[in-house]
Image (cartoon, rainbow, N blue to C red):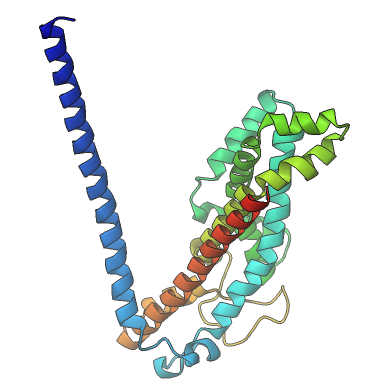
Amino acid sequence: MSLLEEDTGRKQIAQRRRIDFILHILFVVSTAIGVVALMALIIDIVLDGFMRFAPDLFTNYPSRRASQAGMKSAIVGSLYMLLIMAPLSFILGVGAAIFLEEYAKKNRLTRLIQLNISTLAGVPSIVYGILGLTLFVRGLALERSLLSGALTMTLLVLPIIIVAAQEAIRAVPKARRDASFALGATKWQTVSRSVMPSALPGVMTGVILALSRAIGETAPLVMIGGLTYVAFLPESIMDSFTVMPIQIYNWISRPNEAFHELAAAGIIVLLIMLLLMNFAAILLRNKYQKNV
């Protein structure tokens, strides 16, 4: 190799290192901007709502007087909706993913279905509110009830769960399936006893993260008639309801500064719930990964 070629090689290496350093700094700065902005918002919310973060917030119903207002009905409504939505979303979403990945033939129809599912995962949530209003509230005459809200939110998270479950199932090595078939297992035995235990960490993570998104959504529930003032607890799935995001929106839209502090306290409660759900997703993933 000539001296000219060696010099050219050194220059190219030096240029690559400069580009790598510049990109590294760019990525660090971009990440820092997002983290700093998020921390500033969280600190501002905590400072505004910390004084109102008291037992009365959890035990009192909404009131027109800020000093007596709480979000008991909104917290219970969110939990009830989660209890209805979680099993429906898991069964339908994971079942659809298993069918598409393990049983459905790979043809034009399945590719079209897959394309539609991926597209629906990115549709704005307000569209699901319109669909829920048309299908459940008016079409099935479920009225503006807790059941209508839970079914609408199930439609919202289904595409996300299906896509996440499919990715988890695809990640299972083909050798695991072949080994199961070689031992004489049937298709369902292979799926239920070999594929799904390996895919379960990814499936559970996707389900919990999708439910976390649903807990923080407001637009679909506003469309189907989620109330902004509920001074009672739902006694059945056909009763009227409210949820935490709607209650927070109601408080923040009022001119009284005391209600803004209540809204900040409600945001803290919602953030804690979302963090707990994400923490649960991490624990489940780590637990099942150790057992695989």
